[in-house]
Every structure is written in C-alpha cells, then in structure tokens.
Picture (spheres, helix red, strand yellow):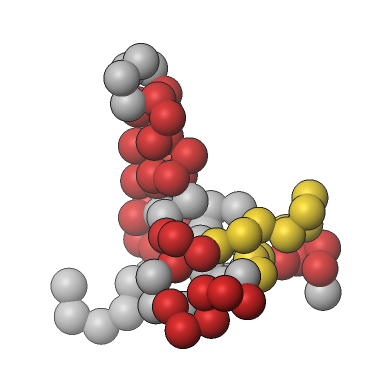
Length: 84
C-alpha cells in the first residue's frame, strides 16, 4: 500500500504479536520463546507495542545498542505510560 497506514490498519497489523504469542504458547517445545515473540516490537523509549515497555541499557552493553534482543532490561513493573 502506498502511503502510511490508517489507524485501523496499524491496529490490525499490530495484532500479529499477540497471535504469534498465543500460538507458540500452546506448543510445549516453543512456549519459551512466546514472550520474545510478543515483545519483539517494543522499543527502548517505550514507544513500541503491544505493552509500551521501556527499558534500560546495561552499562556493559552501551556499544551494542543496535542489538536490542540482547540488552533490553524491562524497568521494574513499569510501562512507559506510567514512567512519564
């Protein structure tokens, strides 16, 4: 589709993380990766989805900020919305 997604379209696209999570959760051999699938669009600043999780960068990993999978550290019981 040329141009940006409509809000309804973006919302539909964003459901893929929950669908993947729910499917993987039912397969014993894959259930351990279900949370990674659910949160693979989260961002350091909390602007991602589905939960808007914010993260801290481990000081030892500052040079590897591009590798979010290895260094995301969720803030203790905090989502971006409540951290502001």
